Image 1 (tube, rainbow, N blue to C red):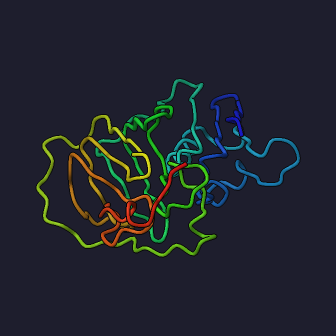
Image 2 (tube, one colour):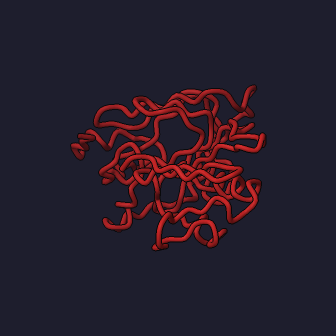
Length: 211
């Protein structure tokens, strides 16, 4: 599915269906702008103020929605703190200046941690189909505050292995509690680690394959 673009008078909204995890912030927040099963275009950018649309788009964890202001307003920028949130029985939700190997640059992404996605490294909600269960509230670890909390975050999905993440990163539970702060992390994406969200080498034992 190619990226769809909906141009209004003051803002353009873009939708990448391959990244969508149906968190539904858009359709519940502004059902007058995001109208599933509508006749004609399902996104109607002229039905709300661009500020309201931009705020709602920024709440989309997967980065499936993006925007471009046409009225001189501010476009999306990198956050002040790089964060990955561990979602309950779901993906890893990143918010940072993301450089994901082989992918276009962006600021938001939900990456698979159940091992079953058909759109790796992105989540495609297969965790629901396979009844994946993993806590979104891993235990906190002792960690020192980072000298720098933002900057580019390099993510390399290792072949048949974890996500290697390099750069300042605060790992948070789904409710926002700090789990750890780090400059290098190896995050499980096979679904089998006993130390989720971190890799413990289980991918080798279970023959996890990314292709």
